[in-house]
Length: 56
Image 1 (cartoon, rainbow, N blue to C red):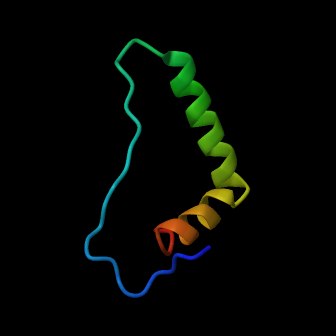
Image 2 (image 1 turned 120 degrees about the horizontal axis):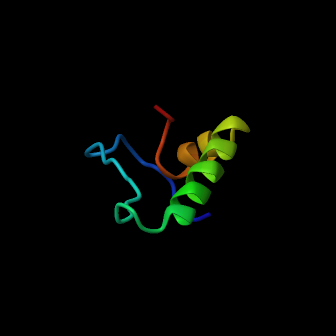
């Protein structure tokens, strides 16, 4: 791509996904299962390193 990291981040930012308690259980379950899979196979770390920086 045309974007590149040119220095250290200015600040640490944390991201999350929120669903209303008691609703959208299927969405939350699907998200958690997908996240577990990409963390297990290393995809999460590759995406994180590309777009955020070194994985924590």
